[in-house]
Image (cartoon, rainbow, N blue to C red; front, side, top):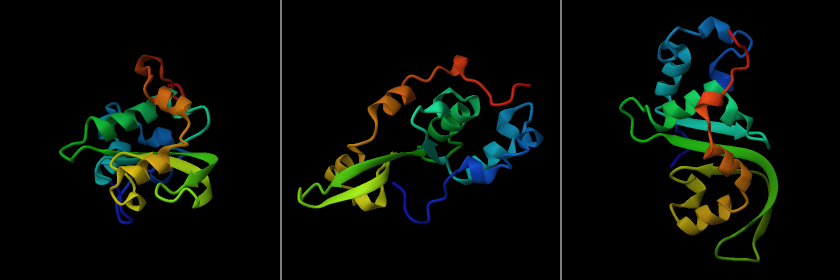
Length: 150
């Protein structure tokens, strides 16, 4: 799982979003983008919009590849996926304890707050939109697009 000091990859903070072309290399694995992901030890946070557009973006798909497949000697990568969604969280051992939340996430390996217990994980992830899970399982790499075509 993840802890408070786990290094993670957040593209929006790691690359200059206004001059991404300056970092595009012939081999994407030689870009600072890839090097920064390796520093994060194949741990990635993805923030999804309600349509799951990231699953159709080529760089986002490459990011997932580096996180889940090409971990460069790291253990299996950790992928945390969050989306804005107002929902009511119900404590797994006390149905009277309810809490309004504004976002929901799925984290491979669980979150620190889950205490390693599957009941906590299930309660925390229960409201995650199934249509976004379905999109993540239906990625078509050959149809992925870039925001700027070269």
